[in-house]
Image 1: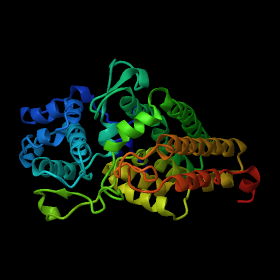
Image 2: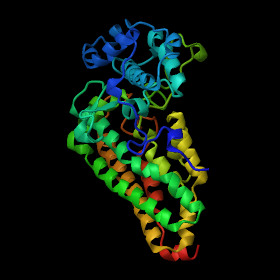
Image 3: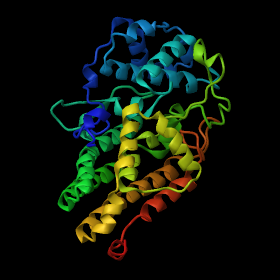
Image 4: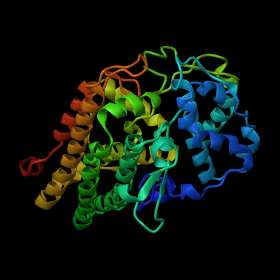
Length: 395
């Protein structure tokens, strides 16, 4: 069965990014206080009385509203609520609970879109941007962030780099279905043509990732960006999670959810599935397997279907085609290089910083897991999948 991008909420131009113009999305007037709180979040956070002001927000009857909201409205609402919720939990003192005026409508919204009730990578990155020039590209010099915490160049740049990376991955994702079809037809030329597109996409992705330090300083990131994107599972400050007040299905019991992290991006997991890169069992793999559930439902399904259908590595090994082996290796090396850069950033932006609070540890990621040892291991495992012509000939 040929995979169709449309079924998975993916486009060739934007990859996993929202297909909507989020800056043009209007919400019903009942949500005006939520929009205003999002727009004023930086001021509320620096007031020292953040929770006082957020406690005054209305408890919106989300059941009544969800019936008439379209996909774009649901996405922008998730962006707004998610930042407000994160700010409430981490912006003032030790987190214990989320008040019902936020918890009840937010949980119903999260249920509607099939995600957990805390800031997801979707709300932080995929849906949280606009183009400055509508006719221009999705690129660092033509995008702006819709919602942030404190604001400022470092916070915005961190998000924007991820946005452009996601856009640059679009052509690679789009060509995966025809490559899988070409393998089934034993169409070596079709496989080679597709691999060239994927290789070129990675040549565009990695230089964007390299630009992170240009306007996102490690110290500023650690102390002014990272503290507010943590989740409440695996975090020392929330050993039991937090209580979502008034949410019937949780019965007043604390809930522990993984925090927003770039590991929720679906690009690298899709490439692992496509390239048939396997990782041995370890704590990070267990965490990443768990984190899979935090992706949007259709993105999860794409990764699963690509993994089920791909026989790319096996096909490359048996063709004995030098050009195909070379292209496969170039892509594997690009994924390896991407993981290497991620490891370097994890060291400089987190591990080498001075811990400033229990909730912002230097040895645990925002998703709530130790990361340095296992990021290196997964990087090395990527490199171990490089092929040689001798290996292909003996396959």
